[in-house]
Image (cartoon, rainbow, N blue to C red; front, side):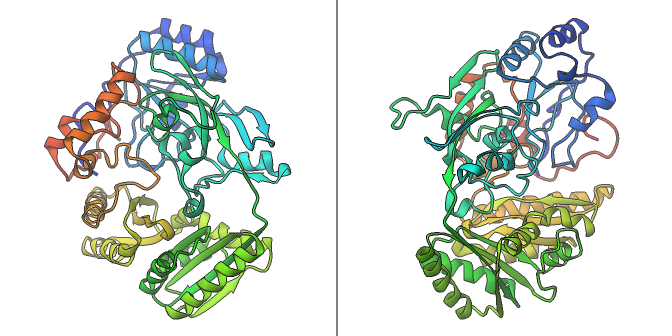
Amino acid sequence: MAPLAPGLLGARHTVDRSLLRALYEVVGEAGLISDFAGCLPYECDALAIISQRPELVVLPADTEEAARAMAILHAAHIPVVPRGAGTGLAGGATPRADAAVLSVARMKQVFEINAADRCARLGAGVVNAHITEACNHHRLFYAPDPSSQRACTIGGNVGTNAGGPHGLRYGSTTRHILGLVVVAPNGEIIDLSHPQPDPTDLDLVGLFTGSEGMFGVATEVTVSLLPQPAVTETLLAIFSSLDHACDTVSAIIAAHLEPAALEILDALTIRAVEDSVYAAGYPRAAQAVLLVEAEGSEFEVDTTMSAISSLLTEHRCIETRRARDESERTRLWAGRKGAFGAMGRIAPDLFVADVVVPRTRLREMVRRATDICQELGLRMANVFHAGDGNLHPNICFDRRDAEELGRVLQAGEQIMAACLAMGGSLSGEHGIGLEKQANMANQFEAADLSVMERVRGALDPERLLNPGKLLPNRSCLELGDGWLPPTTTGALR
């Protein structure tokens, strides 16, 4: 992680009481937090090494309240940091000292489940996993499934263009968003909730998706739903080498096979999972396991799994275990989805990197990340979306040790640099936020960044929405790498 520009997280000032009264009239007591203790839970997202208590937190219950609150804050020139459930791992929801957090957590309305048109219209605060639960009786489901799907909101998913294990088959969030209602920085409501089969105008929905809250705040989301697959088969492949597991994934993709998911967990992750409440029956002696899932008709699944089984044998898989029923399948996936939480048994803190490389470079990138952490004296676990080359090196540390934290941040920078050198991308699904902001200049040309900045300026001329995120500022480019968050009190704690 590169340095934060001086003053990036703002200078604290006292909130004007007339402003609080105006906001109170809009959102009521349940929708306004301004006391120290109440604001403290909003000081960071899941990138907890950067924290800053906000001035106030506004929790509108619907689009109208959000629009009125945004208009009040805009008139007072107060920066606004949008927030879903705070599960993001890149600092995208980290507040500023002089900012208001606008949370969509109370917008939990399920406005419509349209089984005939296979879509659902939802409040931005609806939890990802609850979407499938709401349409399950129609034998429909919502495909994107981030590991935090039991907590993360659809609004937050839109902001970061979230992915998940089944992104290999179904893609990330942007492929499943049909319409949005967005509140602009000045409080204007932009209704993009009426999708057309073949739109001929600008793809504004696509523009807002993945913009990390810089262009507007999504308050309502229309998502596409898919029919539940007729057959789902899940297999656990066990390896004595992480290299062999990576090579198997590359071979599966090269063979033009289309499984629904290909997930790898290494030895350290396996042991952490098996020692936790997420224990899934993974073999403790394995150096790696590959979780394979295929969906479709019985013929499609049998054909895919037969071909994959042959490749597993060719690439030195020592054992395979097929889930015999839904209970076993659920257990295997519970271990994968709970892997990040299980890491708490290894260290008090976890830095989760998020990079993408071509799948032909998978083994090479895993080895390079391992070497980087070993050279810096750090423990690293691997659990990642191998099928689409999306790696998540999990670096274990204790944030109370400033020297160790410095090495962790150095490792993160080196991993990103190695990824870019291999033709990869800075982020697969976590977003850019604060963590990767300065490195945007290493992936994109100055002309590209200029276009992005001009688009932002057209939609938010005063740069009041989620300021200081995603796009690198001049100070980021000048200061370079090696920033370490201060251990003393101040803007960062």
